[in-house]
Image (cartoon, rainbow, N blue to C red):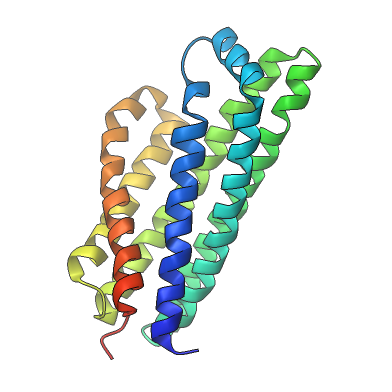
Length: 214
């Protein structure tokens, strides 16, 4: 398979990551993060179908993430074998961390059935921590990818820079979740940066199939 076709394939799986991730976290699970623990437990009980559907979308996202990690390694290894390998490893570690978070979410229905509402809300909170821990790993991937794409020369440098800046946003969000949760509302608007940068990269790959200048 040619590099152009591999790049377009990476773009297609990147699109799946974006759509599945936004659907699961923003569309399906957002109502579960509002209100007191009692309100959250009630929302979970009434929305188990939404919760289970979000698990399927996240599972699709994890599979696509693994695929994109492998494809980008193949495409960028001529730029730097060592950094391409490191970027792949950090992205795969992120996928593994998110997968662990899915196991936590999958335990919520059982907790609710047994009347352990506090345990259910705790599992939801732990999933959020696991997700943001994964994004800390992804932040390192973004920094490496930003440099690799900049050096490769086939992607507009504004996109490469945007990917690198996205790493800063992801790392700030992860550190806030772990050490200063009260700061999260201040950081959340900055997630527009990775949304635009990653969407731009995705569309560039799909339309042009170019990663390297030559």
